[in-house]
Length: 161
Image (cartoon, rainbow, N blue to C red; front, side, top):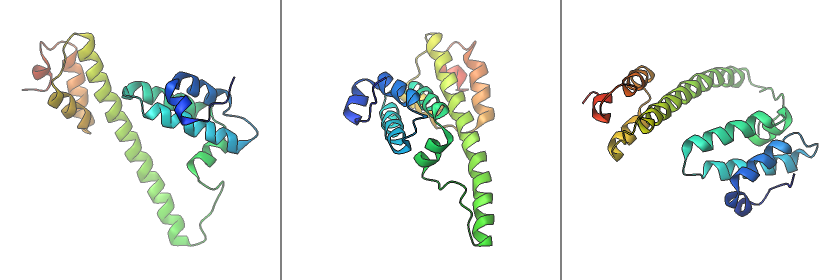
């Protein structure tokens, strides 16, 4: 498998770049693996289809060795803060960030699911309706919209308007 480390090439054939990152995700040369992964991620995240970008990103991250993931994130391996206050703040921030990220991820996935159901049913939301769905971070509301999208006669009915 060729190593795709050039962004222009990766943007021309994002699927190949993603495959390259997956195949080289455990290379012994971590610097090279990070460059290939970073290039593929950047190309994937520039795709107009957010759903495909999300899948590509997930596939790339899942295929990387722990060492490459850490280098990609620029987090020093096993670093321990020397100051107790910083250690505590780091731990608390990590837990909060994880919870926030999980909630945002769930909201994003639900919003994409609502839009996918609407598309499958031939109901095309207006731009402001699509933006409203995509901007929502209220998981309970998104679940309600998702359930409504399965049977509603219009996008307006889904959004309760």
